[in-house]
Image 1: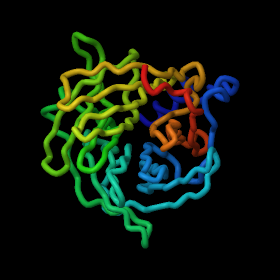
Image 2: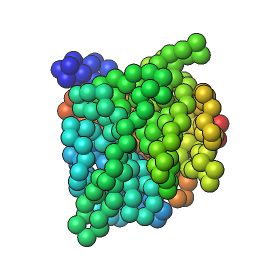
Image 3: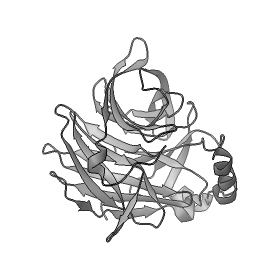
Image 4: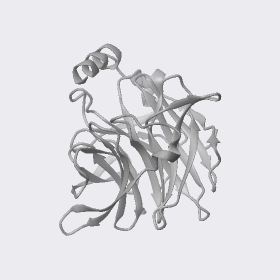
Length: 296
């Protein structure tokens, strides 16, 4: 399967290049010094970007000065479940993070919470929550678990990579979890393309538990930013709106697996450079103000 994936990469995306003229109108490419295979973004209360390496179980706290990296700090994740990838990250509040996981060779999908230990630069996992398979409305495929995560305080939203199709079209689950009680709600988020999957989720959560979300829908050359309002309680289905289609710009050359919003409103995305081998540098895409609409 890995060999097949590499062949497909070479055929479908590995030889493609970014349209630099169009890209320059939208975002700056910011090289970062991290482990490979980054797969999520969370922005904390001070505007620091947190991003995790899915296989190395490491996290990097990155401070930007405009589009320049001012500082980078590495943290080791301790106590993560065996044989899982850390696919998504959320900032819950001072000293607290959550991760979305998927099994490297099975159909596990969990949200794990963790505490940051600054003196030792470690992040210690303290709890694992299995997603409620009987409520998702589909079967999670192996290596296809929680790809997007956002949260605040005691609430997290988790986006699942697996997809299904019903009479309304293609969709993927987004799960709302109350960490204190374990209460769960599920909605079906409509997909806007014929092959795209949810690869990232960021949101702002209101006091009533509702959220305004930005998502990435992606599959090789497909890369779309969508926005949706997630009411509380969640409805059965939500139809997001495409606010930016990056297919003509990225042309399948960059694999975006994390998205966040900086305190000044700029959108930032992280590139996952590890698919069938290393496919380029670790970098952030920092979008220019106004290039990613806040509403459709």
